[in-house]
Image (tube, rainbow, N blue to C red; front, top):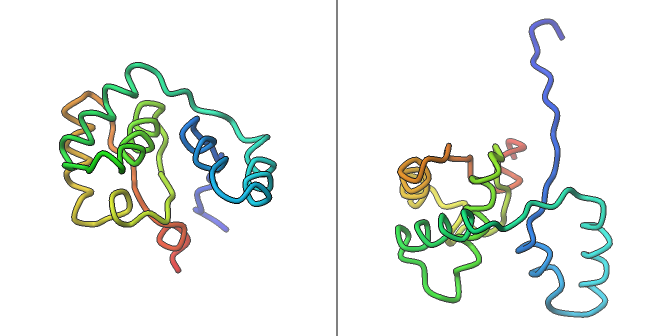
Length: 123
């Protein structure tokens, strides 16, 4: 296609994703672990932890949803363009996106796009 822009898509996971994938049914966890094995791993640094707290506070997340802020902060800290998730309660939520974007900008990070796989693929 003339004028088309080629994109290189790289899928990353964080330590938080790996931890979540290990939960639940042992057979399913083993299958998830196998899928994640060869994906590049994003570290959860002290800066990520600090940004996660800012995001959690800004969103007024309940304690049990703290991992949601870690996912957002990890992606923002590592300059990931898109965070794909099926979690539309605290992550891919149109009402919360401006709050997340402001928390990232105020902390010196470029906001990322939070969306479901369907949204990314135009489905």
